Length: 194
Length: 194
DNA sequence: CAACCATTATACTAATCGGTATACTGTTTG
DNA sequence: CAAACAGTATACCGATTAGTATAATGGTTG
Image 1 (cartoon, rainbow over the protein chains, first blue to last red):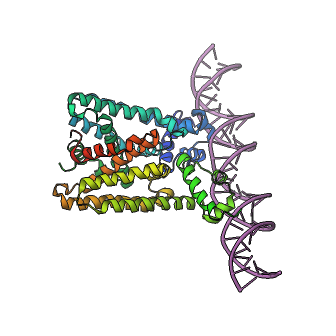
Image 2: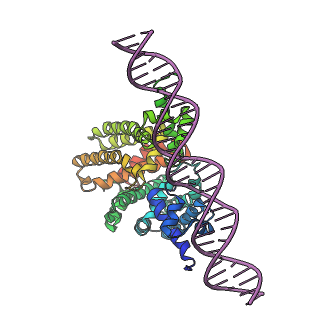
Image 3: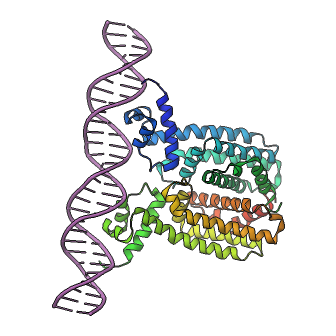
């Protein structure tokens, strides 16, 4: 009866699972509390609302992802190495918490006026800034990157998201293997013919 | 009173708008029929269900996109030219029917067990086959592409989707301009330093 | 003219939605 | 020991959900 904070953690856990599998609008609060083995007042004791639960879930996982991205992008003397590290941060995170990446993808593509998108917008913008910042720093080292920073950042993000999405739908981890990362980096840096 | 088939077209139109803006689960049938200026029995006369309406909307727009992609990928002697044409098909379609690309993105990233994803899966798979088929044909011409076909197709798709997503959120068509396509193709074919 | 048929509206269902008022725990603290 | 406390359950709220039964249109065709 008194496992204390476990109920909160359980709600965060099953909330992520259900939101990832069925979408935010497709999941009812009743389903969440049933799956967590509690009742609705318990959920509303810990979270202000259904959206509040989502915000906390997003916050927990986004903050960790952003922290790891910052760490991987900080050392930019070696551009190929940093590209490798950034890809590995994304891919390792996706394998570790696939449901978060499912949820992230589902929210990232909602319209700008959507309440759920604005709830995650701060994180989405920060994530883009980290990648853009990396390529801006890289352009200082490699002058021929100048003027292409945002194009590089956007393509880099797209390539990564496409591979993660394929992994999430297939369950095949080889899409995120070191071997794939090497070939992906080669292709990104030197083109598809290389 | 007797504008006849206009009501069906109007339902398809406002259905796309609302599903794109608020998501499938976030849009009620009442909202749709109100926006279309009809009542619910009218909608259920033309479509079997809310999901049936979505399926028809997806079918109409996906079929046109796939037809254009097939046309653009058929001539593969000139790989750079074909890459340009494929990108332009995507980007022109996105400018012409942004709501369809919003809807497509929202459904593409849902889980594999989701009813809405399976409703679109046939189209998603076909789209991927077209791109993969192009790079397989291209590898016959350019032997150093061999073994990298699926990697190329996936990256190509990711780069395009990332740019379309940025356009959809910013409304800035320069993300999809000819100038951008040239630079994007250059980067894709010969790497970010080129 | 009469019968038909596609189309549309009024009015309704049973179920579910997110959220809450109230009361009852067990533990902690004055 | 008593009062306060966070945490949890029973039972409920009004609103909304997807979908429908029934009947009235209107034009078309025998």
